[in-house]
Image: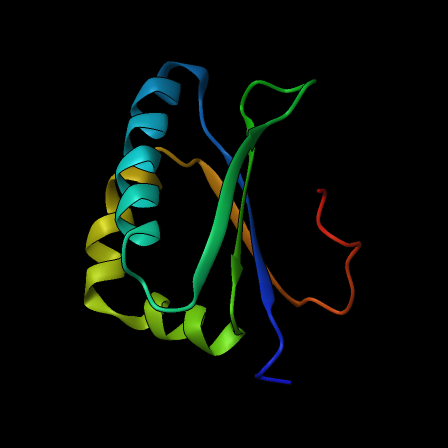
Length: 105
């Protein structure tokens, strides 16, 4: 299954007063990851429509092994530290992509 694309999901809580700091840290991470981490395809940050402290971060990878290699690296820990310092709670889930609809034209 390691050759299947993967989706990584983080459910996090960020106190409203730390929202700006969190989003600034996310911007740093996403541009650096998108610019050169092998296997990274796309990511999103989403805010709950009903709870302003609940956030969802998703990323898609060529394989789960690509994500796990990045996650184990010292660069990863240093890069995401400012973002993680904003969390009061975090949960991580990992999935192999089994099927998807065709891309929009």
